[in-house]
Image 1 (spheres, rainbow, N blue to C red):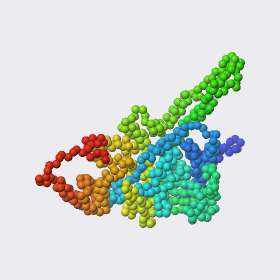
Image 2: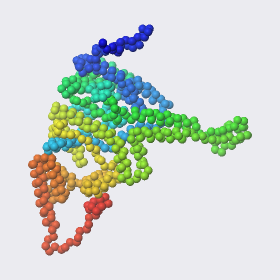
Image 3: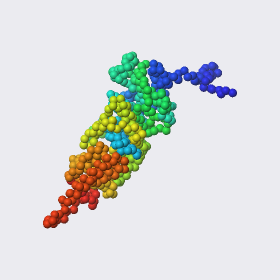
Image 4: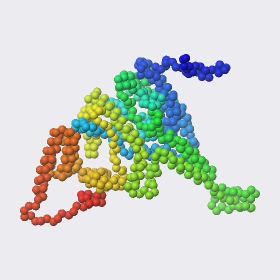
Length: 635
């Protein structure tokens, strides 16, 4: 017996009225949602229908984005808000609707944003068992990426995207090419749409970016779509967030479909304006967006932000603060009790100093009732504490005040370590985000270099600027591993940094000269530059020999003892990493000439026959930084 499909049946009541319409299981309209399979002349209609369908089924998400925006800062959101934002904007525009409150959400977002911004993530390329040339290219690739990030201010954009993720759940950076240059653009999550069902448990295969753009800019960017741009209607009032505009704005849709498999040919990128479309093959296995989530949901592609997690607590705080405000308004002044029948002249009851009140019978009584219940303020404080605890924030992080009893540097570092552990996964998410930006940027550089044969960036060092050309690198992805390292794992404040360096030096893990370099105090920068110049010069000379084969003989004014130590360390490291024999020979030659110079110096120090005896040398001064270790006297 065939199975009865009730979904394909129209159900009626006893009077013949339709109570349930049969589901349309036909496949006539499926082609509209498989836009990447359509001919180019039909693709625009397919993309428009797909975007309309997806956005129409994400009303709750767009509503939440609007609510999150208002909870954070009562600011407007541009693009794809529709009627939900229009309602919110109309309420928010009324000054009398503003009530006293404590913005717990804004406090959490700003505190965590500053915490994430402390350490600048540096993408670093390392090799595993590679030859010396590959290792040198990996080091140059690290410089190239850092120069690329420096020139485009990627760190600042990364922190801005983290703020987007904290408020809306998702932050995006668009990595693209413009005029033979890699560009990074912060993208709002309101602009990006994926199918909620497709991305429920796996990565989506299609993504659409809906952007509102000035018509003249569209003419410049897409001259091949000039006819469609001139005919398309301006963006609707809802599409621009319920706000009026004096600019001629239009809607531009950029769509991507990833290949279904490694050998599939259905990867497509398309630009749609009205009924015009530009499309090209897309062979990447990722969308050109680095995606950062504040908190990952168990299901779905979109993340979850702080306002969504705290909006119930924030709502209760708002209600309590409104109640307290009204109570202060209504009961925050004294009251006068007059007994019925007492003969009191009401005009005498005023706020004049030294007023005389005449009465007959019972005297009027002045009382000041409590404006609010003390338990109400306790409840507000408890709610605020709950919110901070949920997001893992301590009193020290939000107010800058250390808890009672925490005074020593070691105790402060221990407390901060416990706090940092709470945000371990959040920090790893930010590091992965930076690495994804670097990976996609390098792929764009490869495409530009393959077409133009040139791509250079400026890498800033401590004392000079270095130009790094991609032509001297050109590594394949299987030749290196991309890792993230923070700029510094030492404390930011001087006291904490001094304490940590002192502990490392006393334990013998670093030398006195390394301790001086790690201090990096800006007010003694020139002194440090002079003190470290001898070591910096030796590092540069030895690295030039290993990397470029440039030889420079040792000279008498070098720190010969330090040079001997460094050349031995570099030789062992280069030999371990399979450096070319010709480069190792340069180090051997340098070491041999060092021995000759050191021998001459020793002979000069030996006492000559008949010379007068000299007094014993005075002991070198010591420092409290590293007790019993000479050579660390303050300069």
